Image (cartoon, rainbow, N blue to C red; front, side, top):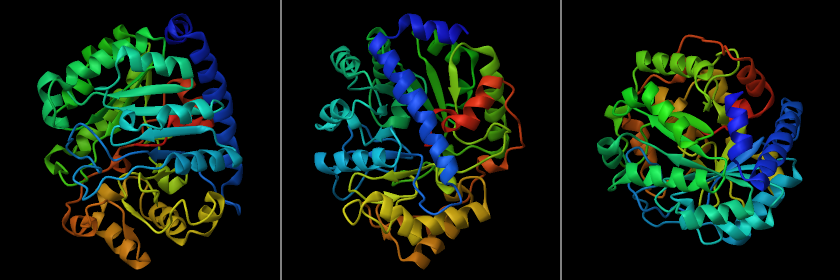
Length: 393
């Protein structure tokens, strides 16, 4: 209850209303519609994650965007079309990714035009100044999710920049002071594992006024995959145990998108909860599976999802093979699957199949022993509202 009272007391009233209505009420209805559609003709994902630009001011380990031969950006018309068509199919929640999305010049006109939607802005925080936070407060329908990748030393190595930890903390302060629903995210890997699972880190986020803390599992992909950073099966089990216990201890929402209310693992893309539209307009299963056969310009989204053999095949075949992460557990199988469907490499590097052919396998979240949720609120949320706020992991 401390979290709820803090949010009510410290959040800008317009931002709070948009969060409760656009995200909470309409988001839950979107998920309900998705559940009713499952197994029936007329598939459409519960929500979209959209990379608006490949441009970024950092160079992170394990990033799927870096070192492209040419960066892409969605046009304002393409982005507007994606959101409009998604709304027509009953979904109003979008994750906005990059690159660094705050480098995308058409961002705020889109937020303003689609004031009936709710957007989660994935940002490294370097550009989230007090002035930018005030712009977000005025639109009211955006929650910034600021990435933390380690302490002062580790963050610079992980993100290929300087003073990244300090920038992230300044971004959090600017966002909280503007009265925004503010999130922090950490991609848990070997170099930040102890920090991510420490009481000090979580309590520090609570003290700064962060509303929710989102735990990812590091996935070694891209041109600098960082295979040595991948977690072991034992570390994955510790992470899951920590998340479940932390939800009982701290007055902050703890988010994951890997396990359902009963502790069973799942893949959001294989479940059809979400798919990813990259900055060139290609529709991918998820951000790290950089292959596609469908483009937003080829047909209305509704028709694409109904007719796409590639996306349907991915959902069906991956679900039959694993409840975890296929790109970690069996990258060679994924390479064979892509070749069978003759899908296009959408990584922008033109060598993603070769990387998958030689990539090692790692334990995924599907290897973790089942640990059911203890907290009734999280059990309810995972069954009724986006499996805990999102589907990108």
